[in-house]
Image (cartoon, rainbow, N blue to C red):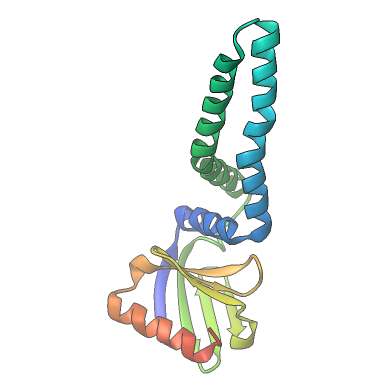
Length: 173
């Protein structure tokens, strides 16, 4: 089975976002930043407001709670924007022609062959660590942080179903 597709910058950014959402260490960091920051900053907001401005404490409790609520609700979106921005910045730093562009993936016996304009890679089935299926892409992980990205927009329903069945057949997922 052979599939032809093209990887864009948006695909790569989405892959990074998906990977970070599923990474235990990043989940911990994300949750610490999401919940600890508002708690840490709410205390000084309260004390500065009540002692420096000599205003009622209930007023500053409400201000601190509003700050915390807004932070907790808006942080996930801001975090995704930051990750996308940082990934974009990293991609601009060097030649990434081997990551992007037209590629073909072929399943031959017990191997997956991925060919691009400048690269060719053969992956044995044993080296597949995980397969993740998202709305817009299929990820075939060959290590904890490296994966082959297959955008689903290039797969019609029948080919996609065949491809997923073939992946399941040759791997243990």
